[in-house]
Image (cartoon, rainbow, N blue to C red):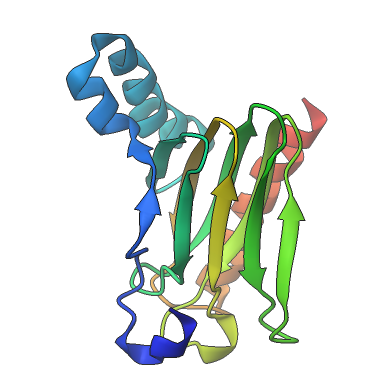
Length: 168
């Protein structure tokens, strides 16, 4: 996928995961969870929106992608049943592929997804799991204004959310 370069659309083209919105359509037990994640949590944290809420079964994955079609700051929360899952990314400075082994339970990753107009901020990433895994993400859009006063304000808000989460 990385070799596709600018032909890549931004969103993942391959994945083995189930969006919580689809799960709620087939099982009413997921409806409350969907509403909390998609609506209430974004508002509670001052985020622009909830960008992701998915269940990954064992063998689940999301293929390499950039999200450059929706430039945003994002906090990605993941829950791994046993820790047999990982998050991969291409380091924007070194170009090296890095692997973050997840642990059992909750963890979070904070990233900035740059647009195609921000080549030094393009964040290639993917994930794989061999156990049950949930992922949900909160986004703070900045409209490709990386490095501006508006961007610094958005980044400060995200850092405040992270500090609050870490303290509690």
